[in-house]
Image (tube, rainbow, N blue to C red; front, side, top):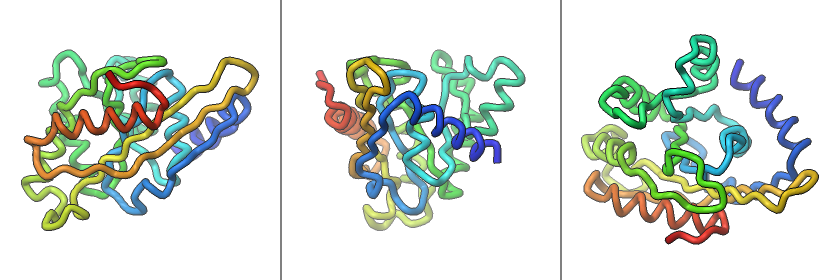
Length: 205
């Protein structure tokens, strides 16, 4: 209920501030599990991504946001999952929770750049992607006989138009990308970043 109310309020505010255009909604699977990987430029990216799905999205976020008790409770109700970017050994519980969500056929949002990169593409981080592929390879999805049963990784581009009153923001959702096992994590991450760059109308160096 908290997620639904907050999303409705965010949608009103965002549409007052921006002219939003969403393309490629059909590329988000009708059923989970799925990993959604958006471009990260501004704090508004999270609320904007929430408008692409009727289902609740669970966001991997930096652990610093969860240090204040009230903020931790509120973000958790919104589907926030804290990750320590400097000491990954402290996020074992969060990793297990991500796998729990995937096992429950939920949608998880990961910003592969890890932080804001306005107007450019940052280097994609493959740690979480590798972990998910390792789980998939050990039968985590129950059915991994065909590629269609593998976890879909869905790239999502966000393009902010020129500054001005209610500037255009275009959200483009790419076709799902799949991989067989954890040894493909680096290749998959690079492919994801190339797709995000193209969908965001940015160059990928």
